[in-house]
Amino acid sequence: MAKIQLKTPKSEHLAAMVSLDRSSLGGIWTLSGYERELNSPNSELLILNLDQKDETLIGLACFWAILEEAHITLLAIYPDYQRQGLGKLLLYKLLEKAVQRQLERATLEVRVSNQSAIALYEHFGFRVAGERKNYYSQTGESALIFWRNDLQTAAFQEQLNKWRQEILSRLAQGEWQLEEETRAKIDTMGMSRLPTSLNQVEVREK
Image 1 (tube, rainbow, N blue to C red):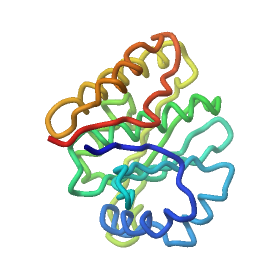
Image 2 (image 1 turned 180 degrees about the horizontal axis):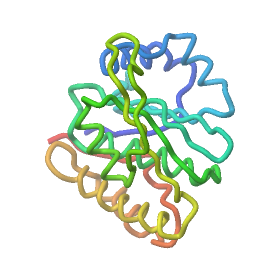
Image 3 (image 1 turned 120 degrees about the vertical axis):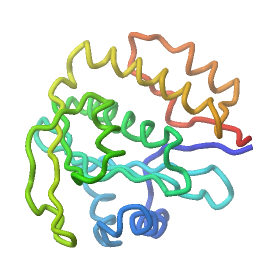
Image 4 (image 1 turned 90 degrees about the vertical axis):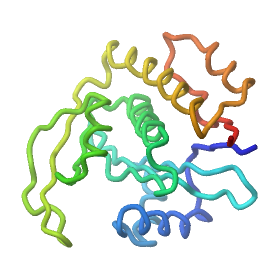
């Protein structure tokens, strides 16, 4: 039996965050960069880990709160755990956090070649608003700019509820199986309220 925990990181998670960054993103931020994010009131930083004795880190996400905007700066899942719905879980939680901060818009940049990430963002209603030429200095690759402008609307909050159910169903399939007690708690939440029970999702490995 294992658990997935989604939470705000602490200083003891910094080394694992840098390691995940390197393995999944090629090393976007350094240790000092993550320290700044951890201490900044304008950063929303989340980690996803297996609740084992060593709390193996398998996911990482962050946005910056700038005026009324959530600028999503990174979203990473350890390669062995990709394509299992965990990226959706992290992006969902970032958007929920943005709504709770009263932010009205969300934006991000993504490599033009990263088709899986593009599909994920489009699934969550992001649309291309432009392109930054030669945005990634290491490769010279351009970035697509994605936006979503309706975070404080009733329609978006209803969509959050639908995504919640979709994510729960995805985690219950295949490699992950939700513990019945936890699922019952999540499924009995009022649909008119923003979800909170995904802070800790219990799963069982098949």
